[in-house]
View 1: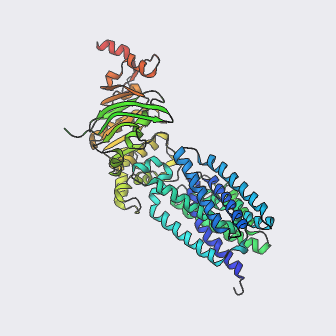
View 2: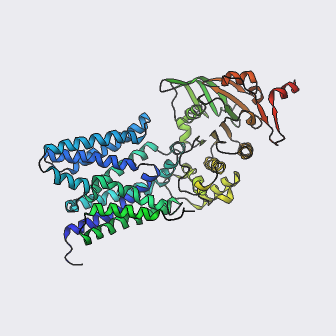
View 3: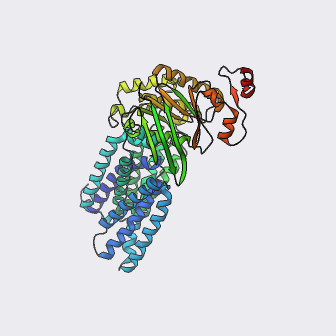
Length: 264
Length: 263
């Protein structure tokens, strides 16, 4: 175990914590039918990445702002105007992505920089990123641990949650905010386009294995860890792009789960 | 005089520029069992949501046991069964659904305790589903799911129960079972029940009062008073023939001839 290159250590720790973070959120993404939301947030973040490059600052901060803004706008459109989230996402993500591509075309080194944000580049993960990922993971576990019953009831039916005095708007926007943070943090590992796999697959596999939400959340964590760590190991061993290998591992696991009988 | 369970004074609700409820004034006393009938789009669901404080009225005033709806909700006085429930495939057991109903009384972010489990089991017993407590909720039939959701509403120990089409997806025999369960619960727990339904003929046997709603209130009062074909024709906008289905299932009678016989 000696001489582990620092980039690999950083990648391993990021893969580990992001698995714990995204697989927990994955359950709520799947039960709320929010698969497309992860796509929307990550692509909106790409607009921010491009802006950062053009302004010559670290792209992380504008990416974060774009992603959080996208998540909040999507939430507002749903709650204030009663439109389905997907409509808002479809408009928002293509616009933000378009802005990103235009901005990138103004800056030098378009292809390589854009490529590493689109498909991930573990070499860009820093020690600071790890602290951030750890912090957001802790925050997410605290939030979901504290409000689990309210979140579950809200996922079943929001009006019922309201009648029980649960602060539904607060829980809804908090969940969106945490999802936006998690997705942005995962971009360096797997990229804008492939992050959806880590958001959608863990709980989708788990849903095929149990009918109890508690077990599904636990299985989802195991699946997420398997996807990230096996994906990273295989990519290192075979010299493949890590983000893409994780996405393929996730897809393969989901395909395998399809042969399981319906849970009872 | 005790404070009325629900009181609406001149309540008008407009949704997307369309008037859905027009100057509704009605009073529901504590311990009464009301049926609300009317055509689709007549504002029945909107009425329930206005009572719950989910939809604020443009004009008029709603009070629930003397308080504005949102404060009554915060006090946990209202139990609700929504129409067209989403989340019927949510991975959870029947018992856990019922326990979620107890959220408010027991601080919704604390874990469940044994006492809550016992109370939830009791609520399931009340609706006759104690044996299905550990079944996955998505595997239950439509009627069983409705009864679980009623048990959930009961577990919160509400003073008023609002039910939106509780008979959706329930076959005719089970429907009557459902109405009977509700009638019994009303008496045992001295609940006020307001039930929205399509089932004009059947509910008249079970409820104390009926309100006929089609944007405005066409009738409210004694259930048999509502079984007037002229009134129902005005309400639904086309000629109607009312069939009354006897609770002991001795066959259906056409109400018009029944009323003629009474006369």
